[in-house]
Length: 291
Image (tube, rainbow, N blue to C red; front, side):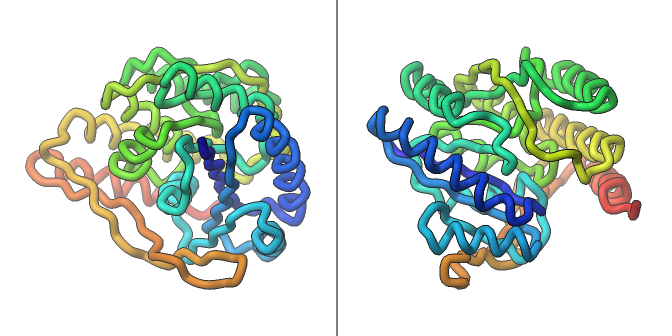
């Protein structure tokens, strides 16, 4: 069995090198004991010099495969562009600050294999978040359950395990969101496609001192994505997804282009077309308004 660990990277800085190196060492021991192999794939859509240098160092030492996208696209879009370059039977999606310890990730992979589960979702039972973030998170998760009835308490944790089958169906063919609501969309499409999913409790320890994303603005963009997702699930005969090439995917071990970077667009017809156009404009105003 091969496991691919996909890590979307932003402005992590030089500390990314030590963090990934430490994770690689610990996970290597666990994987060897269980008899499976693994790969780490880092992907970034931000040209942040200290971060890119750390990625290049990891790539040249063979610790991780590192991809740089030439256009800004968001967390979800970065993951979608990375998936075609993975080889795993299972795909692990993991935030770059490694908020979950390697032993927890290892157990989740083995659980997915043992039970034949398509998607393992983290339920964060301990979080060092501010009161505002906790309140906004509760409101968001309540709304997701009203819209989609997933039965889950946590839709936004940046740790998931997917079977290759689930990754092909959800990550490659179905997801539209390129931004922060991507984690939620993965869960919604798993439910819609009748895939087996299970939440597991994890201790969540964020290594970052604070988010660079204004929480209220993030919430508004995620709500806009939820409305769009709701329309997509209700009116699938009127909408289709289309991939549009917008840039290049650069492999950092020897700095060469290995493919095209793409963004996912909605093609709409019928009564939903005008509503989707309005939502796009509102999303753009909120998401890209200057601070």
